[in-house]
Amino acid sequence: QLRSSKLQKEVMSVLLSIGFECEEEHQDPRTGYTIDIYCPPSSSSSSSSSSSSSSSSSSSSPVAIEVDGPSHFLHGTREASGSTVLKRRHLEAVGYRFISIPYWEWDALQGAEEQEKFMREKLK
Image (cartoon, rainbow, N blue to C red; front, side, top):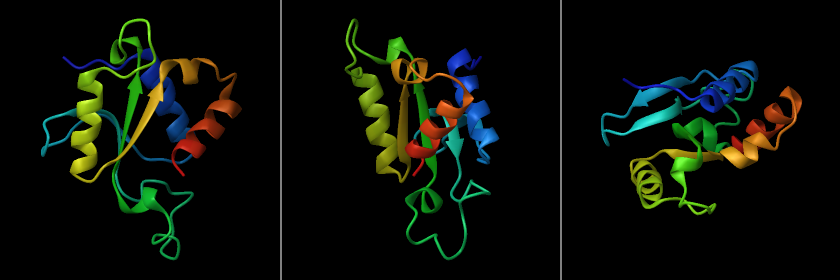
């Protein structure tokens, strides 16, 4: 069974609060990977429009957001593990825009306002 982490649920909650329609634990049929948070092309109701679609990469490609806890990194470092790097490469190769949310970056944010600003920056 797939389970979402507390951290992943927090990120998903912020995405919903800023107007993104995303799906947790999405199974990609091309790669077989489960994506923590999947946002289809033009998933933001607040930032997408027909006139800006050519200038916004987030509206033209699906977005794979991986909420990376300690197990995604080499022990005692902030260097991504081999399997984490490989997943990113595979997803990018089939057309995803890949966004990593490392646990230490998220943990440093203080309050909803900082979390929303952080996610808006990541999704630019």
